[in-house]
Image (cartoon, rainbow, N blue to C red; front, top):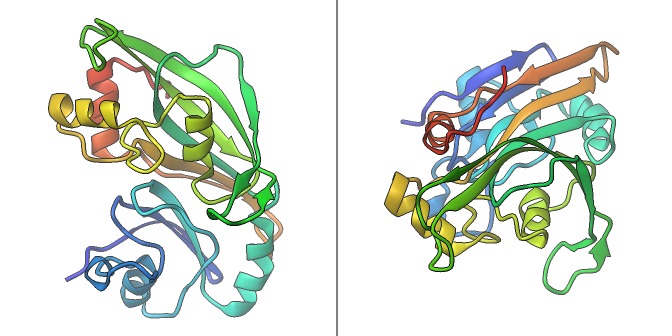
Length: 236
């Protein structure tokens, strides 16, 4: 039996959930045995009507995911997601000390190995940083980490993960674009097998009601536990 998804906003046109780690947005071409947890199917069965995903977040990423309840509602909202009309805010734990001053990563990305470069921009800002008395690399006796906010201005695949890798501030738990030494260290030291990337806030103007909507998704327990262990402060 599939788990219930946590609904954080719902009206007659849209429904927004807090997606847990390990749940796919919709069916993909990956192996069938990995197709058990599909958000579209779970939510459809949960609320008793067809739903239309308006955007995607990666399977290991947690947090806000938006669906429409009709094709008409989807047609009004979906074109807004690649624009700054929808403001998506993420939290992430990354390797190293990020700069104190907020910045922008403006680095084009390919959709796939043979695709053309597409414009990609991510803004970021430092929330807190810490240094722990554990060595995650033979070169250093201590390890440094940062908790950051990330704002993807564009919406490319794995954009935040790839942009942080571009800066060599890899997101902890990223097994595709991250640092395997760090991932192995967190598994061994903290029993962490999750990606520390969370879609925590979404702001938009409701396409039908024309009123501002702001939703937030609380951090999952594995993320909060790591913040505590790393002594990374998260302001209220």
